[in-house]
Each structure stands twice: as structure tokens, then as C-alpha cells.
View 1 (spheres, rainbow over the protein chains, first blue to last red):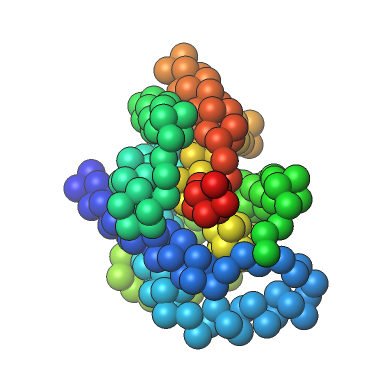
View 2 (cartoon, chains in turn yellow, brown):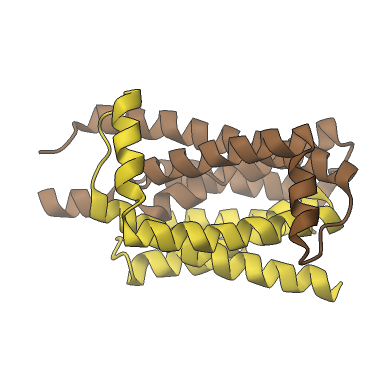
Length: 122
Length: 138
């Protein structure tokens, strides 16, 4: 039980860090407009040198291995929803760190989602 | 120069579908595979390597790589506070997939959770994809 919740903690923190860094890195890169295979290869080469993306991939690797461990000791329908605590954390981080404008529709929608995911985990 | 709004919305929809499907199917494959592999609550890297030899685990990992790539591309134009709630429709699909393929139970509370997520996704899906772009133009 302790192992399960420790894994949930690691997953939440590393996912939030990883996704905020990923969003920062991609804002830095700019909108992707070309989806041909060659362009995607060039994109990957650029991303491999983007510091935010490198840090983000490291955080997500931690999150991924912790998630694999969690899946091996609990049900999919517990493991997937319980990690969604990240919504609250990441919406706040998006406002303060990424300077996104979060209108009331988005706050209510995000809260409904968080609440729904909580119910799903029960 | 900005992409016109109709094209931006189409790109967003297409990538949202890829992000959601690769995540749900990827996690489902991992769940199926790890059930056969056994407990991984360990720090032994050999146990993880062994797990990758399972074809379901390997397919799951490939799909999650596709998820990471499409999620990264989507975030190059869309707000994190948009992408996050909208892609959460994946939780609904994951619950339904667990019910359908792994015989996991969905009781009344879980159906209520599913309804709330669908309502939340619909609400956020109607907001602007990129609030920073809107701000710059207005």
C-alpha cells in the first residue's frame, strides 16, 4: 500500500514537471506546420538539442517507469485515473509559469474533469 | 504570420485524436503485458528489460512513443491548459477499455465520473486553442 502511494507521488510530480517543461520547450520552438517525414526528422533533430525538451523527456522517463511499476501492482482502472491529480497542479502552473489566460469556462471544465477523474478512481 | 483559425482547429482536432488513441491503446497493451510479466515494483533493471521482451509491452512502449511525439507537436501551438483537459477523454476510453477487454467493473460512481469528464472536455473544447495568440492579435 505504501509502495503504491509513493509511486503515485513520484508519478504526479514528474508528470507535472515534464509536461510544463515540454510546453515551454515547444513554445520556444514555435508552431509545427510541416508534417512530411523529412520535416518530422528535422524536427526531432532540433528537439534533441532543445534543453527544455531534454529535461522534459528525463522527467517523463521517471514518470513512465514509476507508472509501469504502479501498473504491475494495481488495476489499470486504478492506476490511470489516480495519476490525474496532475490536472489541478498543471492548470495552475500553466497560468503562472506559461502565462496562459485561463477563462472561467476552462477553469470549470478542468475542475469537472478533475472531479470526474477522482470519481473514476473510487 | 499565423495559421488561419479553421486550419488551426482542424490540426488541433486531428492531433488530439492521435494523442488520445495512442495513449489509451498504449496503456491497454502495457496493462495486458504487465499482467503476464508480474510485479515490477523493483529497482532491478534486468526485470524491466525482461518485461520489454513481452510483445504486448513492446507494442505498448511503441504506441507511447507515438503519444509523446504527437503530444509534443500539439503543444507547439496549443495551450497546456487546453490540451490537458481535452485529452482527458482518454480516461473515459481507458475505463471503457478496462471494462471491455480486462473485465474490470464500472459501477455507478464510475459512470458519474465518466459523465463529469465528458462535460468538462466539452466545455474546455469550446475555448480558444491558444490564448496567447488571441492576446497578441487583439
